[in-house]
Image (tube, rainbow, N blue to C red; front, side):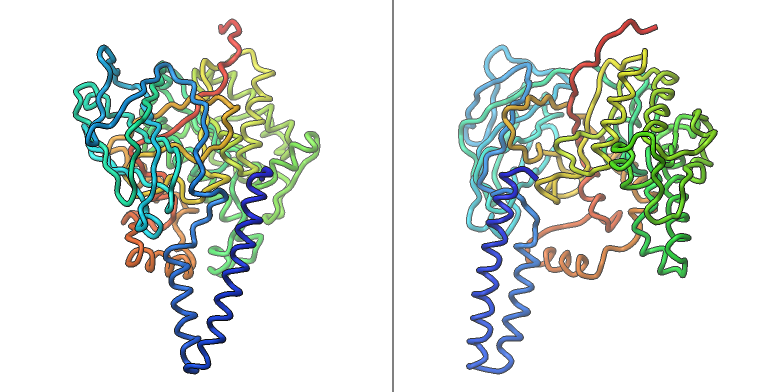
Length: 474
C-alpha cells in the first residue's frame, strides 16, 4: 500500500476502535434497563454492520477518481433534463470506447443503498458506485454510440445526483482481435474472468496459464485427503480446467498451455532466477505433474525445474511459435496480486529476448488494491472505471462489448472452473442474505462465487500498454 492508503487504513482503524468503545458503553449501560437488552442490541449492531458497513474500501467514498485518460476526443457537455447531446459535427463510430466523466453526490439513502446511474439508450444499463459517493467517477457508455449520435441517451441517478456538467472521452482503437491473441493467465480462470469475450471473438486465440493454483485446499481436505494429496488433486483439476474450459469458446486444446509452476511462488522465483522453488503445499519440485494435459511441448519439459529462468524461456518459446498480434496480461498497478504482477514481469522480460514483438499489449485487473467489490453493481450491467488516484500516469482504456449470449457462455465457463464451485463460508452467505433484504443487493442465479457477479458483465475492460517496440517481423 502507498502512503495515502496507509493513512486511510489508520484512520479507518481509529474510527472503528472509537465506534466499538461507544457500542460497548451503550451495551453495558443498557444492562441497567434489562438483562436481555445488551444481547438484542448486540445482534442488531452486527446485522447493521453486515448489511451496510462491511464493504472494504481503502479510500474515502468522497474522493475524486483521478485519471489522466489518453483520449482521442474530449467533449465538454451538459445534461439537459438528463439527456446527453453531442456537439454539432461529432459522430461516434461503432467500436469506440466511450467514457463519461461525471460528478456524483449520494443522497442520504445512498449511504445505505448502492447509488447508481441508470443509462437509457440503445440498451438499458445501470452502473453502481460506492455508498456515500461524492466525487468524480467515470461511466462506461461503450456500445451506446447510436443513441448518442441521435440524441436519445438519457441518464438518471438512483440514490445519487449527477452534476449538470460532464465530459465525454472517446478512445478509438484498431481491431485487437484481428490476428493471433495470446492471453496470459497467472491461474486457471484468470483468462475467463478477464477476457472470455475477447478470446471467444478473436480470429485465433491462445491461452497460456502459468501456475497450477494448487494451494488453499480446505474443500478437498474435507473429502478425506491429507494436505499434500489435496494440493496435488486440486492442482491437476485446475490444470485440466485451464486446458479444457477454453474449448467452450472454440479454443482447441492444442492452443492451450499449462506451464505448471506453483501458486504464490512466482515472487520467490523472480528473486532468485536460477533457483528451483517448490510448491508450498503439494510437496513438489517438478512442474510436469501439472503439464500432463498439454499437447504443445516446451524445452523445460525435459527437467520440470520450477525456476524463473525456465518460466521466461517457456514464454520466449511460445511467443516465437505463436507470433501473437496482441498479448493480454495483468495490469501491474491496479491488480496487486503478487502472481499477477510477476506474470506481467515475466512476459516483459521474455519480450526483451524474442525476435517477434506483438503489435499491441492489453492489460486487465481481476483484483483491486482499493475496492473488493469492483466492478460494483449486478451481473449483466456495465463496467465503470475502477478507483484510481494517480493523475501522473496516463492510461488508455479499451472496452469490448459482450453480448447477452456471450455473457451466458462466460458464466457457464466460470461454472466449469473447480476453484469457483465450492460454497462461500457461512458468514458470507449470512451477509448476502442480510444485504439482499436490507440493502437491496442481488446475486446472479448461475453461481455463488463473487466472481460470477463481478465478471459476467456487458463490458470487458482492458488498458492499452505502451506500444511494443516494432522490430522487423518475419
